[in-house]
Image (cartoon, rainbow, N blue to C red; front, side, top):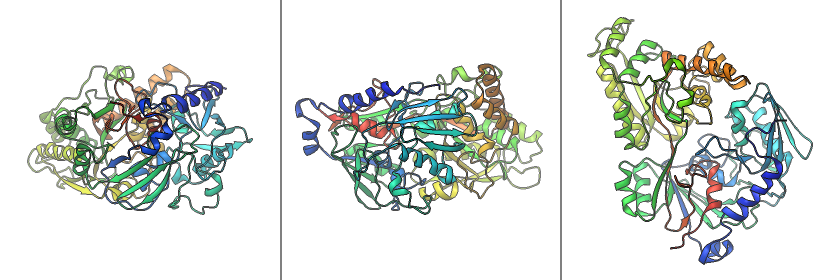
Length: 560
C-alpha cells in the first residue's frame, strides 16, 4: 500500500497528541490552564454576510445555516487536516490516523484514531467512517466531491474504500470528508433533506441556541482533541458585506470573511494593534461562469470577444482593492503558484485588453452593430444578465465592470443581485443563469481548477443540479484529458493531458477567469492570539472550512 501524502499511523497518533496538548492552547501563559480560561474567556463572535438563515444544521446540505455560517466545521470533523495555505504539505491526522492508498489510487485504507467520542457520549469508531462514506455512495446528492465510490467495507479496525477510477487528484477530498454518527443517521429516511436540528459531532463545540440571525455554540469539556481557550462561539449572520465590515471594524465581530474595500484604512487602521487580515494564496480562482448552452454564450466567438475586452487589472484593483491579484497567464493559472503547470504552448502568454481585436473577431464571425448595438448572426440583439448574491460587493462591483466591457462591444448586460440562498440552491446548481462569478477549488495541482469549470464528467443538463461545470461546457478531448491527468502514473502523460486541457480552456473560453482567489479572512487579537498568518501559515484563516477547528485549538488568550 502507498501512504502517499498522508501520515503513518504511529506518526499520526503522535501528531494528534501534539495538536491536543501543545499547539492547541494547552498553555495560556499568565492566565493559567485552558480550563480556567474557559471559565472566564471572552465569547468569540464569527460574522458572515449571508443574511437571514433557515434552520438547517446538516453538514451535507449546500447552503444550510451550519455550512453557510461555518459552525458545521466545529461540530463535525474531517478524517485528516489539510493545510490549504500550503497545499503541498502532508495532511495531519485527525479522526483518522492514516489513509493508505494502493499503487494506482483506486483503493484507500483508513485507520481511525482511538479514544474519540461523539458529543452525546457514544464512542466513535470505524463503523462511523464506513457509514459516512457509504452515505455518499447511496445518496448522490451528498457526494458533493463527486467521488466515484464503488464499495465501502469495514473490519472494525479499518475502513477500505474502493473507487471506480484512480483518485490521485482526489486524495484530499477523501481526507477532508466530514463524518457523522451512524447511530443517529442510520434511521434518517432521506439524509438529503434531513435538517438535523439537534446535531451531534466529534468536534469541540455543540449547538446551544439558534435563531435566523445567530447560532451560539459552547465548548465541550470532554473533547478528545484537548482543551479549548474559547468557551463560547457566536455565529452572527449580517445582511451584507457593509454590515459585517462595520461589525468587524467596531469589534462587535472578531472573526469573519468578507471583502473590505480599502481594508488597510477601513479595518486595520481602526485598531492596528489587534486587527489583522490574512490572504492565504493557492491555485483557486474566481471566474465568470458562462452558460455555454444558451445565447449569447453558446457562441465561442462571443465568449472569446468578451474575454479579450475585460480588464482584469482594473477589475481586481477596484473590486477587491488589490487584495486578490489579477490573473495574467492566459491559462487562468495564478502565478507564481501555477508557474510549473503552464504548458509550453502558452508559456509567457499573458492576458491583454484588446477591445479593437474583440470587435474585429465579432465582425469576422458575422455580428453586426459591433461597438454600438450588437446583433448576432441570427439577427438577434445580444443581451445577457450578470447575477450574484446581493451584498457581495466585490462580486457585484466586478460584474458592473464586466457589464461596461460588454457595452464596449455593443452588448447589453444587466447586473441582477440575487438572494444568497436562492443563488446557492436555485441558480448555480441547475444552471439558471447567463453569467455569474463563482470560485473554483484550489488543490495541490491545477486539476481542480480546470475540472470545476470544464469537466464533462460533471456535466448535467440545464435544470438538473450540477456539482461543478455549472456552465455546461462539453468537450470530449478535455474530459478525457482530465481523466488521464487524474489517473495516469506517468509524468509525461500527465503533462500532455494538462496541455490538452489548457488548450481547451484558452481557445474555447468556457469561463472567464478573473482573479486569483486567496483564502482571506479578518480577525482580532484583542482577546485571542494564535491565528494563522503569513509568518505562521499553518492553515488558511477562514471560519468556513475544516480548518476552523484547528484554528480554535491553536488560539490562546492574548497576553499583553
